[in-house]
Image 1: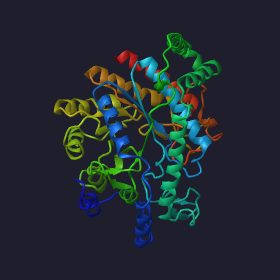
Image 2 (image 1 turned 45 degrees about the horizontal axis):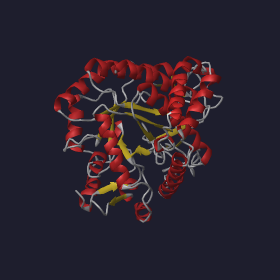
Image 3 (image 1 turned 90 degrees about the vertical axis):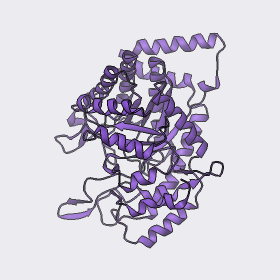
Image 4 (image 1 turned 135 degrees about the horizontal axis):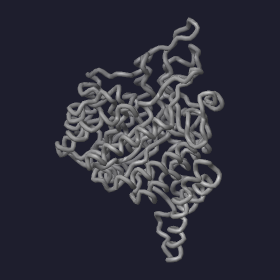
Length: 446
């Protein structure tokens, strides 16, 4: 498993969604430069996350995974990272208390700089240019210069990821994540938001629990810092391969670009390069499953990616769409459960619910997002299995990208702050709204 030949076997297989670089020699130079860089994460941290996800697979914990659809280099700054992290921590406190379950916090951060696209090119006003594939590949501006696929951007993606991860580590260890402070932010949300007032009871319960523990002299270290993990789609294989290292202690290969990496719905072919590459790394890994996925697809992926049936090794992130989740999901879960495999099941309620608004903006209805999560919980409750978590695209800013929510945004509002580099994200209020609702759903399931 740890020889370099295995790690390069993917090169002989079809690799979908890879950019067409002008000069393969330039890509090799960049890859060699990346291979010299220090790791962004460490093998021991990846092992720790695998243990946590094993708890999720056994029904003992819940995953909260979220962040930008596509991170930008410009967004690798203290304020943007802090706002995203703040929102994730607020959601986690609500879920931990209201659902009475440990929450595994995973950012869709510090590496989500590349995106699969349905078409390789984009046309505007008679001009055809390469599609925007994320800041790791080319620029968002619709000009020939910006849209050139530039391999040196891979190095910039690494440095932006390092900055983001450094900020995340500082914020989660340096007092910013203190439980009482995060709870105070939630109290602000409850007091100031029309939607938030529905959650006064839960906020009050958390307040009394904290006061009680303080009175008892309970002040554990866990109250002052949190475990936080990074994740992104392992899309650009040259980048992931260059950041794979053989761990000196175990002699096993880890992709040190993130704690968890996933294979997207468009690149999960059993005979494809992405599945081949990821099966050789020791990180916990995930696969996105859309509405066309069959139970046999899921079992074949388990055989390929988790032959040892190790809880925490493999997570399935389902993205069915609100109208399909109740029909498409049960056969998958039933057959996987019968096989004896222990995977974690997470709901991505974003990607199956995108539509184009009247003004041309891509958007999602908050009600559809909530409906898919509700369907996900209903299916697990009916089957007696564990709804393991949610995977959402959100930002800590007050953007207007998804319609609905507690501070309702309608289609005519979308232009006001539509700032995403790719798909529409929930704003802070909508994200917290979702957390309280998910906590209620979890309580009903257990």
